[in-house]
Amino acid sequence: MNGYAEKILHVDLARERMTEEPFPEEWRRNYIGGRGLGVRILEDTVNPGIDPLGTENVLIFATGPVAGSGLPLGSRYDVVTKSPLTGTLTSANSGGKFGTSMKRAGFDAVVFRGRAERPVSLVLDDGRAELRDASDLVGMTTSETSAALQEDLDDPGASVACIGPAGERLSRIAAIINENSRAAGRGGVGAVMGSKNLKAVAARGSGRVTVADRDRFLALKKEIADRIRENAISGGGLPRFGTAVLVNIINENYILPTRNFQSSHFPAAENVSGERMADTILSGKMGCQTCVIQCGRDIEVEGKRTAGPEYETIWAFGPDCGIDDLAAVSEANTLCNDLGLDTISAGSTIACAMELSEKGYIDEDIRFGDAEKMVDLVRRIAYRDGIGDELAEGSFRFARKHGHPELSMSVKRQELPAYDPRGLQGHGLAYATSVRGGDHVYAYLIAPEVLGSPEKLDPYSSEGKAAWTKTFQDLTAFIDSSGACLFTSFPLGAADYGAMVSAVTGYDIDGAGVLRIGERIWNLQKIFNLRAGCSREDDTLPPRLLEEPLTEGAPRGRVWEREPLLDEYYRVRGWDREGRPTPEKLRELGIGEEEAVAVP
Image 1 (spheres, rainbow, N blue to C red):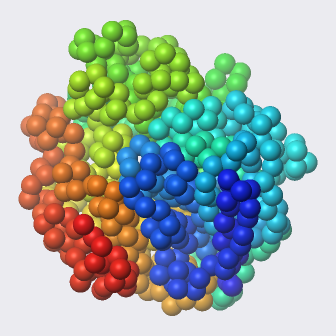
Image 2 (tube, one colour):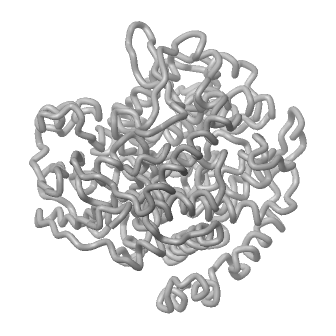
Image 3 (cartoon, rainbow, N blue to C red):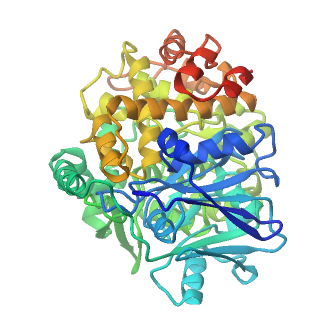
C-alpha cells in the first residue's frame, strides 16, 4: 500500500511473543497513522482508569505515511500511551530518522503490552522482529545504549530509540531518545518504557515507501521545499539561528517566563540567545532526515562537541531558573539527552524548587541563578538521588508534597513551556485545553499571536481565539499523524497537507478533510481523558497566571482571562458546558456509537 508498510507489530513482553496484523483500511482513512493511529489503538485497548506504570498500560510507536516518502521534513514518529505524569492519553513526537527506519524495516507501528521478566530490546530488521536480552545495557546512557546496539548489529546506521537511567528509574518526566539527541520528550513516556523493562528499540531495513501519484508527488516535493525556503520563519530565522532565535523575540514581547513565571522579562536573555550561541559555541547545523531547514545546532564547549539546546531547553534551564550561563544550559541539555529526561519538565521542576527554597518552604538550598546547582540537580533527578527522588516526580507532585501545589507552573500536572499566557490569550487557551497537559506544540498559537503567521492577531484580545485554537489543534493532530514536521506549518496550510498525504497514499483528502480527521483524533483523546477523571476544572492555568498581573512591558497589568473564553471554546467544539463531546458531535465525526454513549 502506498505510504504504508501495512503492518502493525504486537509485542507481548511478558510472554516474549510477537504477532503481526494488517493496518486496517478504515483506520488509515480515518486516523492516517502516527499519533492518530496510536490514539485509536490506545482507546480500543486500555482502560482509562489503569495505573500508567502498571502492566496494563500499552506503549505504541507509530509513524505516518509521509515518513520515509522523501517529502521535505517527513521523518517524524509518535510514542502514544497513558501518561504517568498527567494521567491523560499522551503522544510524544520525535524526529531524526527513527520513524523512517521503522517504516523501512516493515512496520507502521509497534504495540508493546505487559512487562518483560528481564530487560529486553527489540530489533526490527527488514521485516523481522526479535526480542533480545538487554541486561548488559542496564544503567547505560542513551548514547552508550545506541552505540552498543549498533555495534551488536554491526551497523552504525541502525536507528535506536532508547531510555537512559531516568526511564529505568521510572521518573515521571523521563523521555525516549533517538539518534542521541532527538526526544519523544513529554508526558513521561520514558517511564512507561522503563516500567515494561524495555530498554531500546533498534530499526533498520531496505524497504521503500512507494507513492500513489509519482508526478504529483515530485511536483509537491519541489513546491514544498521552495515554500519552506521562501518563508521568513522556516527559511530565515530557523535555519540561521535555530529555534533559539525565539529567545530575544519572546523576551522583547515581555512574555518570556522568568524565575518560575514570577515575571515575564529576563534582562540577561541576550546571553543565552540564538545569536549569542552563533557567535560563541556554534560549530554547525543539523537536521532530521529530509530536512531542508536544519534548525538543529551542533555546539562545542570546552573541546566537547554535542547537540545544542533548543529554545524551550534554553528557557527552562536559563531564564526560568534565573540563569544566563549558556555553557551551563548546554551542559544541562546534554545531560538530559544522555540520561533521558524531558528538558522542559526538568528545568521547570528545578525552577519550582528554587522558588520553594527561596520562600522557605523546603530546607534544601536551591537558589535562582545558581548554575552549578541546576546542573547537579539534573543528574540527581535522573538517578533519583536525594532530593532528586522527589523532583523526578515532576513539579506538581513535588510542590504538593511541600504544601504549595500552586507554585507548580503546570496544566494537568505537565509543566508549561516557554511563553507566558498572561500576554497571549489564544496561546493560554491552547495551554488550558490541551488534551495532553501543559503544552505548546499541540496548538502553536505563537505563530499568529507573535510571529504573524499565517496572519497577525492581537495577543491581548480573546476575540476569535476559540476558533483559532480549535483549528490549530485539529491541524496539528493531522500533521502529527502524517509523519510530517510541525515546522512545515509556517508556509503550509490544511489543503497542502491533504495534497501531500493524497499524493503519497492515493486517498482524496482536501483541507476540510484534514481538519475533520484532526478533530476526530482530538475528540477521541478528550473522551479517554474524561473517562480517566479529567473535567472542566482541569482546563485551566495555575493560579498565578489567573490572578497575578504582569508588571512590565506591553502586557503589563494583564492576566489570562479564562472566562468566558473557555465557554466559547467548548461551544466552537460542539461540546457541552462541562467540556464533554456530545453524542451528536461524536456521531458526526464517525467515532462510533459506543464512544458516544459512554462519555461520563
